[in-house]
Image (cartoon, rainbow, N blue to C red; front, side, top):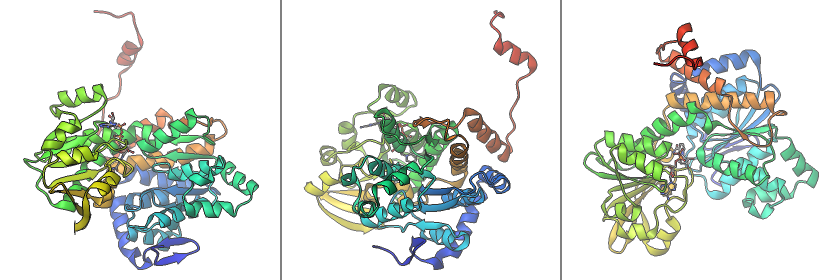
Length: 447
Ligand SMILES: NC(=O)c1ccc[n+]([C@@H]2O[C@H](COP(=O)([O-])OP(=O)(O)OC[C@H]3O[C@@H](n4cnc5c(N)ncnc54)[C@H](O)[C@@H]3O)[C@@H](O)[C@H]2O)c1
């Protein structure tokens, strides 16, 4: 265990960091007007009253504002990390000390502690779960399907102490869940397809006010921020290889080009590749890009996108980073087997020697924006987390009608978040005139 401030109700690094966490959380709150409006309504209406909610999210200042909003709505909140490197220890301390929220998260926690914290979030016996990458819901499903061998040891040991009916009650007690990210939604849709999903899930990532902004502008900016904080490299004039031209890849390619890089995109989807080509980037297979890139960034949600054969082709000094959800996009196991290292040369930078060349891997191949920087700016998380709060409310209000499937929040709520965000930014738009409404609804009028 990597703990220093452990109580029955929390496991965090150091409570003394709370004041700094509070100051930084308040700073983020200034850029989260939509969530603030929701918090005010939640405090009046208490839509989550009496509900236990376990959230497995990156423990950042923005998440702190979400947790406090859920608590204002009446929820009893427990929070664990969705990545071992993304926790901001001062924020964890602030939530425990100033709000009495149960937090189980320590930056840099080892694999055992990470899963011990997931166990603690499960032991909170949630009515609602909230995930970023489906680790919490994944564990619940292994329990439901009695696949205890697939559970990490800390969770498995605990489950083995529960009776059969207790295990059933744990899973049956969950009315519904929400999922933040693309990778989690893909896993949940696979569960629904296989007919094993145990409760309804709201795919927050599917909201337009989430993926169009968070994945594109949030990941775009914060991934560049993470790489710069880790390396302090000059982007201008360098060649940056972007693997994946989905929402995150598009955003990052745009920011890398904006900073003066020559950007090469790699893709497996012909449509996305065509889009990248017409957006003005060079498109090439990884085997070709590997020879010329200075910095490589994976944003695919896929596994082993950069393999040893690619690494062998890279130039001396190439930098490798990942901003996709899991640390599987760069084949680090393959690298470990063939290269010498690692030597830590700076915080978040490991040097590997491969065939007389040096390769630098950032943050152990984990989400670079959350490991080396602070994750997305609050202004973009304002919309993502407004979706999360509304999704939790939607689960409470409609769990019985929602099937055991993956749903999105109603489009009207999505549009309402966009309307509130625009209003908060002081941006006004036009409305349809009666004549225009009639015109758009008619088919008789031609040239
Ligand atoms: N870093 C963050 O804070 C953050 C934020 C949001 C999402 N994510 C994660 O980033 C990943 C991507 O999310 P997204 O919303 O952009 O998904 P997306 O589905 O929009 O895009 C992924 C793209 O990767 C491409 N791809 C798949 N395999 C590939 C391969 N072998 N080589 C090249 N391209 C390949 C796909 O064709 C697709 O275009 C997911 O894991 C998601 O969970 C991270």
